[in-house]
Each structure stands twice: as structure tokens, then as C-alpha cells.
Image (cartoon, rainbow, N blue to C red; front, side, top):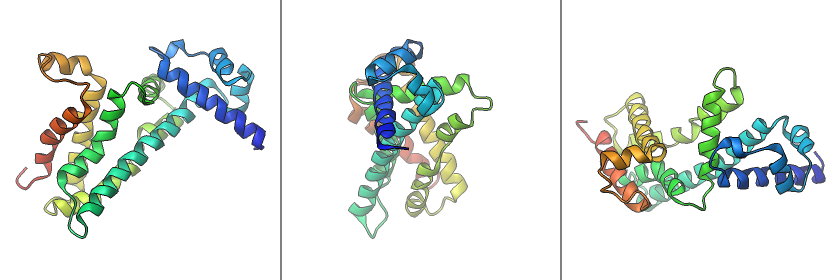
Length: 213
């Protein structure tokens, strides 16, 4: 791909990301809006990505890489802080679930891209391998397993993986079902306070990895 083509593709991705962050619903996004924002033509989307859905997928993948990079950076900091001893359990859990919580509560983050993409993926679940490539990717989660094994050597990889999946389920429930959380807590928690939410979540998840649980 030529430099000029690369520039156009990047502008389309940047425009799509901006518009997804501003949209209340995925239906608001159109090829024309993306093209105008990117100073390109609607046909450029098909030329560079094949379709608008493929463009959204590429944008979501780029955003997801940024989120995962933040997660892995926090994990590495937790490891380095205690080396050569195992990292603190609470820090590892915060690295696992924290970035999603921070992004979800930050109005300036690109979290809406992931929310819109998840909605799109769930409506095209059958035969959409490019959706599953992102939704079902767990390699960045597997990086946590060796560190959790050092912290909880009485658990094997199956048990650690099971507990991690439960932890991620808690995270997803909180980020995607805010109103339900508000109702169940009688509006007693400030869900806009990322530090508070992460700390409370760590309190719930940490016992899963302690001996006897």
C-alpha cells in the first residue's frame, strides 16, 4: 500500500473512531459521515476496508490494542515493584479489570468504540470470524496466568482461568449494566469514581485467588 493510501486509510479510521465516540447508537454512523469527517469519499471505505463493518472492526481492534497495552503495562509495573517476589494480588487484579473501568467512566476515552463494536458483533455472531477475532481473543488475558500462579500456587491453570473468567464477568457486568448496578446498590456508590469502583471490585475478586476459596 502506498503512503498516500496509508494516509487515507488512517484518516478513515480516525474519523470512524471519532464518530463512534460521539454516537449514541451505531445506526447514527453512516459511510457519508465517515467520509466527510475524513475528507474522503464513501467509496474509499470499500476500497480500503471492504465495507463499513470491516472499517469499524479495524477501528475496534486498534482501540482494543491500546486498552490491552495499558493493562499489560500495569501488570508489568506490579511485577517489577515486588520482584523477585510474586506481585501483590490486588495490583494484578486491578491491572486486569482497571483499564476497562477507567475507560468506561472517562467521557474522553474511546470506550464507546468497543461498546458499539460489541453490539455489532452480537448481531452478526454467525460466521463472522473477524468479529470473533477480537471478541474471543484471550491471549492478553493468558499473560496474567503465570503471575496468578505465582501468587496462588495451590491453584492449577484450569482453576486460575475459571476465576479470571468470573472476574472478567464481574467487570463486564459493571461496565455494561450501569443502571442495574445503580438499582441493586440503591444508588449508594459513585459509579463515576473509577478508583472507588476498581477498589470495590478488587475486594470482591481477590478472595477467589486466596487459599480455601
